[in-house]
Image 1 (cartoon, rainbow, N blue to C red):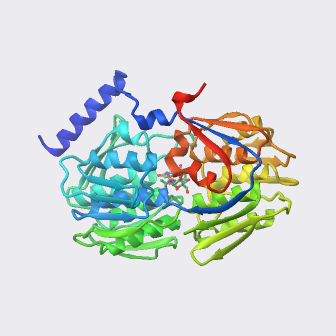
Image 2 (image 1 turned 90 degrees about the vertical axis):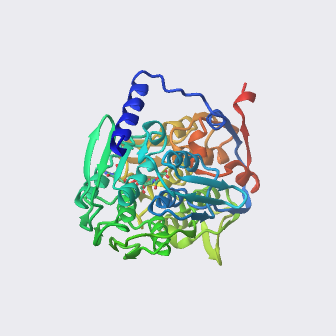
Image 3 (image 1 turned 60 degrees about the vertical axis):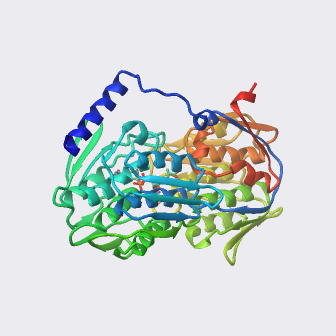
Length: 460
Ligand code: EPZ
């Protein structure tokens, strides 16, 4: 049976199974633990040190890069315990990649020596849309790929049209059928000039990886400039790829025949770093953020200093403190890097709920990223939304409540609110949190927060 025939038959089985609703959803222990609760009692200042983990949004594309070579790719400083990392590991294993993670060493080793199928199934891809990042590498190395369309998520429809259009420009034929992307490049991918209609992190990453093995030169215009893209590019260069212009809106890649493996350290997570900076702005205190790079957060530093937080870089760490100075409201608008990160919008909004005066938040990246607003409202926040803007009027205090996590960053914004609310806040559905924050309870407890995780079996 040809590779494509096998892929189609797998897809038909998969689609039939889903249609009949017979997809076994036996909850694994990881899924059960996702129903745990987090309880936090507000009022404690944060003092101490938090070690910043490797960036989830760098580790995910880096893991997909293993498909570009038959040699081992070793990722150090990797956030091995995150749900998203485990989900992508399962997707890669379904593509015959050998994946081993060592949490103590924060190491993930991957080897894509051979693959009998280039098929990423719906049931795995639906859990984590970044799985679509296997598409470019599979096409570049094997010339064929069957990848489920990732579908939308809570924060928006999140199409992948920019990924597909660019791959077609590089000579791939793309068919969409039964919720799957059927992609082929029998004679391999060819270099092309790709101008993205809008800045897209994922599309930049997918095409950057695909272009490393394409015949000829590829130029990406209107490329994303996130530090996670620079990290991916630096890993690819250490594998022998020829790339210029990382961190600018124009990246040039000259394809090579083959890429060897490498060992690469995952860049520190700037979104986790920004989350804890906002936490200290809210609670007051003095915290050292170990391994954090202030240069990756310039768009956050300004508004936080304007609000009253003291911030400085001390060698490899960031020091943040607020001791008694009142918080003042300020305005933010999310934009592609180096603008204010959309992944810190919810957290910043939580801070604005307790600032003197008002602040305005404008979300320009995703169409539905205000789901934390009603939950913050239940805790006493005064927020009015109008389309993709929100006006936040500072209140004297928040009240603890039972709240529901809805997406990764909205969930952590509720934790931040609980750290300063009077009384106890209970956050449900924390599987959202487990996707992107390692050891959040331990890290906050170590700095004096009164926070605990309640297993589902002990919940009343
Ligand atoms: C990445 O998502 C991040 N995820 C997101 O982080 C982050 O919010 C986002 O970039 C923006 O910075 C990972 O890196 C795994 P985009 P991505 O393509 O690549 C539209 C988190 O919380 N678009 O830059 O999916 C899209 O709908 C997550 O860690 C198209 O229209 O984001 C969005 O409106 C959430 N067509 C905008 O572009 C496309 O083909 C930016 O999306 C692709 C994207």
